[in-house]
Length: 119
Image (cartoon, rainbow, N blue to C red; front, side, top):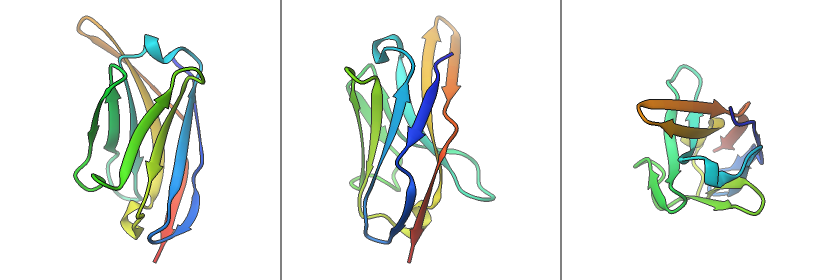
């Protein structure tokens, strides 16, 4: 298990920006994938952005061109830069670390950070 701590959430007006941080307790080189998920009230948790093998990134269609995932391996930290925020981006955002060992996947989750976008 990887201990993850998110920070950077808050209240922002539509069109504004936030940067979320996820500090990991282990080297990012030991993790196969890092991701940011979000869960809005009454909705399922969804993948927002992911980084695989340190360089391959993918984004949900709803955030493409607005959100960017990056990492600082020296700080064992992954970031989610969120620009042009919309009210529909309001959710609790969770950091995920995934280790793959053959057919097994080991997922670790942070405690979540609230992002609220006002219109």
